[in-house]
Amino acid sequence: MYEFLDYQTRDVMTADPVTIGPDASLAELEDLFDKNGFNGVPVLSNAGELLGVVTKLDLLKAFRFTDEHMFPPYAEIMARSVASVMSRDLRSVCPRTPLTRVLEKMVDSGCKSFPVLDADRLVGMVAREDVMRGLRRAAKGERARCAEER
Image (tube, rainbow, N blue to C red; front, side, top):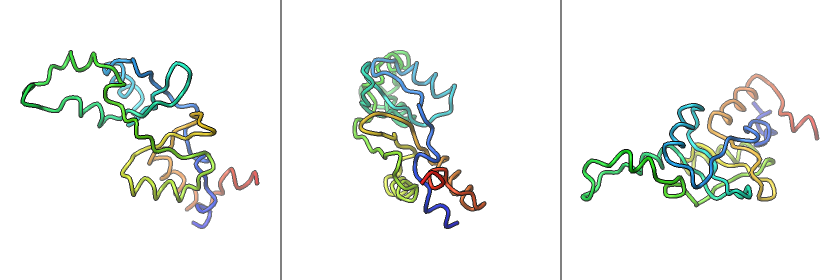
């Protein structure tokens, strides 16, 4: 299990993740979630700048019942833009962040995934499942790829 100490984000992250634009509709977002099983998707500008992250929970929040809308207007809400619900409070990691720190950050924040940034450029996503995969690999004695490159 000591092998886990050598694991970095880049050993387990999903490189070149699927992204969505801020002007995409919530219907498009839901379709993306359905097709890929993601919990969160990075939101990129046309220039490739990371603007935020949008999660399934963000989508659900759009349907909160209010005094104004006891029955939220489904079609109207699904036509709204991703920018209207995305989180702009970015918590990210870099490719060389030790996986032990990613694990701690996930536990402390409750976040299910983080964008992976290298010099402010999105290069991947790391999710809870990725960290668990790293733990399983380390438990089997598998060394991290990055440790072998050093």
